[in-house]
Amino acid sequence: MIQKWLITLGIALLVVGLAWPWLAKLGLGKLPGDIVVRREDFSFYFPITTSILVSLVVTLILWLFKR
Image (cartoon, rainbow, N blue to C red; front, side, top):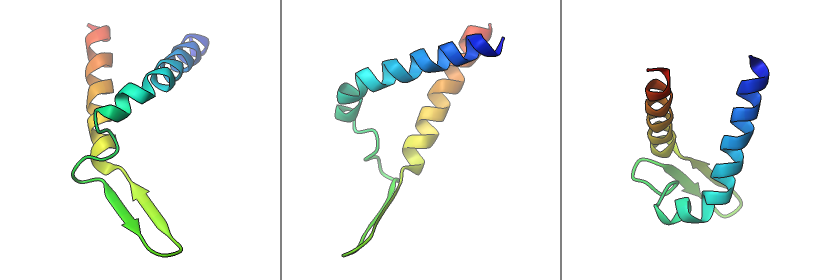
């Protein structure tokens, strides 16, 4: 059972990695609500809105596959 999940996760990561140039054009990571702090020697980035959006999409996809 765990082998299937690991293979599925690996394939999903591969697909996201290959599709990243197109996903970046959608504005993921630059949505309103994503926290960016830039200073002279320091930069902090926390994509809270992007994380919530991705979580909702993944939850919806998994929910549809369970049905």
